[in-house]
Length: 345
Image (tube, rainbow, N blue to C red; front, side, top):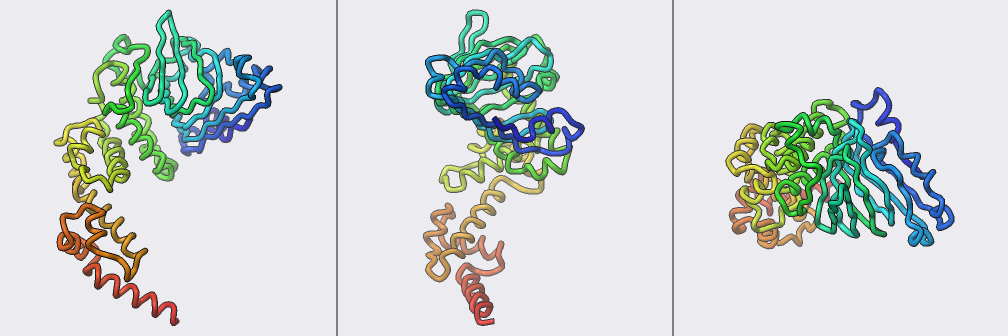
């Protein structure tokens, strides 16, 4: 088993200095899987320490056991993609330090049970739960999921009252809250260098995730996220980046994904001296520019303009010239000429 950076990040003064890549893997032979209880002791003190009484079912052990987790860990916020073979155990041990955990299943299945109530988490569903309560769980072979873990005290500090929080909720991945959470997590993973350099950026990331969890567990949507405009902007921009090729990309669609009103979205972009459509057009121009340069003299301007959803060629040419200082044709001539001169030199 290999867990890189886990002890450094969890247990040293460097906690707030770096956003570390988190990796954990386990590959057991059938013989090792039959007597694997001691292997999981290495998780103590790390982000999976809320999992106890772990065992590999005998009927699955003959195939061996594989586990892997890859993601980002900082200030005790974990976001990781996980693969796990058949595993049973308990999540939560009635400790104040036990986190709030979300499991979003993409394949396979996890069943959580507490006090006679079961939650069946199948692909496309997410379970967010307070692990101070103990949950018996059973993970099916070959389950893939996204695990997000946030310190419990941060989630409770954002609730109207601790008593308002439910112990667990099950939600669909298509809900605005979950879409926002996933887009925001992708955005912060892309910005890990900024997180390394800024404690303020780490605070924004952790507080935004805590707000989402608190809102969902309290049945009050994610209104508290409006106190985190930078988080909303990061999630919105990430969604735009991933959907530049969509013809229906609009402020209304972006706002629904970010979990705010269109008016609020426009205000947050305006406060950053930008606008939703200006950002979208700029990124589409840059994508079109990259495509045009890769094709060179063979580039068909009208096709590129259509692919990146400009109304027509003249509309694309006008915006291209405003941004790059020349029409696409002139730009290509200038750069192909400079390329030849460089080659001759």
